Length: 413
Image (cartoon, rainbow, N blue to C red; front, side):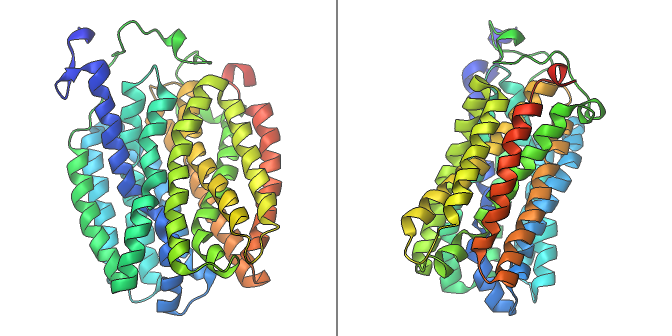
């Protein structure tokens, strides 16, 4: 009987929240990539390279994270979240540890970018899929709280990494953090598990799941043929591009354009991370209550406003910088709740792990474009401010696309 099920010694409807807490902690470790802007300048100085090359490990990490996620989704279906989490978490830790041995940017691209990024791609899906399956009645809230750890990670990791880099240098910092991540990710993955097939909270029926009830489960091929998928994929890519670009250059923009000192810039990365974490439950709730379409429109409208705001940034305009980057970090966090929640709402839970794996490729594409745009803006035009013109144009286009295409599949045919 559903009512007799116990989780962590608690009735299922209470005990399932422990999975959200575990997922939050796992994501704090996985989301340390968002603290890379603290590493960026020290890595450039260490290896005597430019801004584009200095951002390559970050770009490759995010690309492999997104690229391996579909494979991780298939592994989840066969092996479950515990085994996949242990495997992925071990790879993440090994990637960070090997990064401490880097002798050049190519080495770091492989160890940090490819290996650690691939490990996150495998480990990331477990906590999210666990939340989706245990919370069919509160998908947006559960997913948003789970992935809030990923966005909020730099609040902890950027501060710690900045202190360690100042004391021991970037390579030793990779080693120390790698040891911690390896241990925590393996231990935290052990309790993860899915509910039995057909489990649902007492008294809940699918029709009460939110503003939109999916008519059936779409497999990946069926999903990819819908205009709903295409619209969500493009908007997710635009939101990811703007947010990941801002995250990757938060510290350099503060020091080089606003003329802040390095310590204050690193501290602000931690503050921004709080808003990235906040964006996930916030936009998860908005997705549940306002429909995915309007949550996406609100998000992209904020990105547009922040992009325009940064066009007027100048030395000393600290308040403008802080306000705009809070918006960018908040909205990226929002997309990492909007996209998985919408995938579950529009295309069903049965093929969710595989379907969201494909959807997350938009995030990887956004990461690649983000580093190209920001790196070229700096290397060609001499200022990161030129990177915000493309994000303004793309976010305006995304608002139109969201209004037209982000609808339940049966409405978008």
